[in-house]
Length: 287
Image (tube, rainbow, N blue to C red):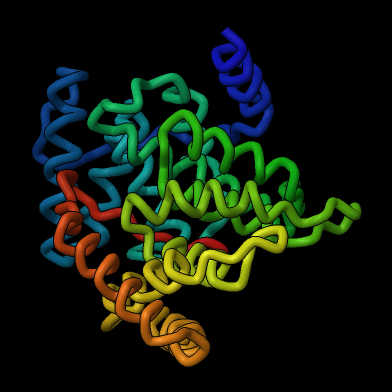
């Protein structure tokens, strides 16, 4: 009951953040008279155009579907505005589309096909509150960002939200809130188990050097080893390699061997999941 109340309160709070969006007309080959069918067709048409490199056509079709309430189309339009992908970059408009999703689908079942897009909309909104949006009413507000991350992390179990929430607990706040390494470790562990690369490295570093004076060098080096082996080709590989090499050089041989064994066992048991949606989720705001 408490969780449901908190979800409703958050949704109510979001209502005041909504922007008024102009109606969009999709002038493709879809019959607009059939609402449900035309929305689905517009989304599929936009998806095909996007992957074919026809960004203008894709945007027009996806925007039509988004204006009809298609959640994944709204998410993709938000991402296009956030990244300047086929349109002029506009964080205000991106915030608008992510807000629509959060307002309309906050109570979607976590196992629903669109839940990962809904969860990411909360993450994107939280990230905008971490930095603020220039020349807008959205100012930096870590507490509000934390609420968005917490919701996506707890209700949807979103790994990136869990990682970003942990990062808040790892940092001292402007209002004097101290770090909370135990809470940070808790959220990092949840994200790391889902395969989140940065969470694996941060968790490993935290466990290796100690949480509240207690070290676990084997588990720490295990997660750092997992992260390093998974980071090849990633833009995060350099700092992950540096942290792994530091921990490895400080460890005794018996700790090294056991940590590598555990890391290899984990990597064998956990294969990367394939994306099952029409768009892969990437993160561009305040990484």
